[in-house]
Amino acid sequence: MSDGFDPALFEPLAAIEDRHFWFRARNRVIAAVAARLVARLASGFRVLEVGCGAGNVLRVLETTCRGGLLTGMDLFGEGLAHARRRTRCPLVAADLRRPPFRCGFDLIGAFDVIEHLEDDREALADLRRLLNPGGRLLVTVPAHRSLWSYFDEAAHHARRYEAAELEEKLTAAGYRVEYLTPYMLSLYPLLWLARRAAGRLDRRPAAQQLTQRDLRIYPVLNRLLEWALAPEARLIARRRRLPLGTSLLAIAAADTATPNSAR
Figure (cartoon, rainbow, N blue to C red):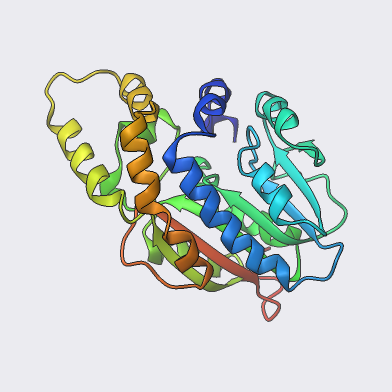
């Protein structure tokens, strides 16, 4: 798993996540969906974010999941050091393949995590075993192989997903997919054009330089893109399916009809 992410990325990411339109838009979507999921749970429910990194999403969940016990888990102490400054919830340094928990969770979040892992099927099965019966997995991943680029390589992605592929892998791991949608719709044409242009350059900067450019905050463009993406949170909270997007979001239930399918 350590080959799937460079812990040196935590520092630059933590510096821009609060302001960058992409992270802010994703946080709005996750908060809107998570709020609906935990609203039906009795007080004392348990929530786990796997791969919580520097805690950018974790602190959103801390506000959204009041009334429950929230835990953040990550393989890297470098990320957890940032998360400790952002949140007061318990943090655990652990490998998903050897989780230290003796109790199950009612909601597990994995936000842009499993694309880093060579064996995503095994990871989904491991998460399934951590869910209480009827618990939900909320997962986000990058979408469309056609958008693969220097950014994915610099981020140590193993893949981008098609919707059918993600659904098939979730089902095979013992989940019942309740909802799956693309999102980041307004970003799709811009990203598609940018990836095509970068691919045609004969002499282009290194992947790391291009990635740093993509993560730079251009104030006017940043505000415009955040405004354009803002309506998605309301639509996704109501489980409307968007036609296109650069990312995918899925809600999957632990399928009690096939309890051994993830083993």
